[in-house]
Length: 150
Image (cartoon, rainbow, N blue to C red; front, side, top):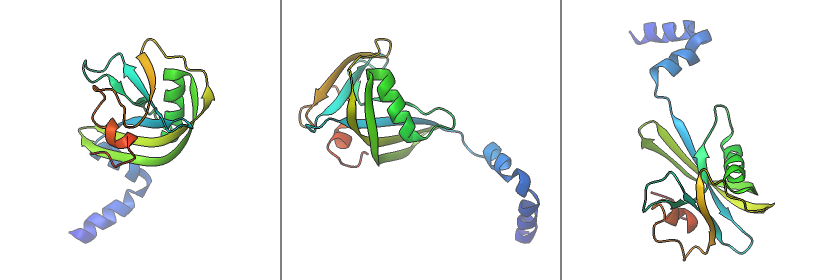
């Protein structure tokens, strides 16, 4: 039986990726940037569409189809704040959120003028890692401290 399945799989080589796509879960990818300035402060945003009491968080958004996740960080930070960043190392990769995958990267401020997108963002604030808003998203604290997020 195993040989038959293996032979069938080899015959399907031209369409294997389509078969795999049909048989597996599809994910959206949430991408976050832990943006730091040259003084070690981190950029936090108060998001308009997040639940009350948990609106403070890091710049984030969803990757577009085919978009490199590092590019997503650059795009989302620019869209939400007008700032330019350089993306660094991967600091979080989580699945298990149904059909959502979470990715976070360190990022360094390069420049730009802070102009928040009023449709998505209510307020922006540079914070020291030990002085975050009380109602910050729980995942942010370990990321800001440079720890692995839960």
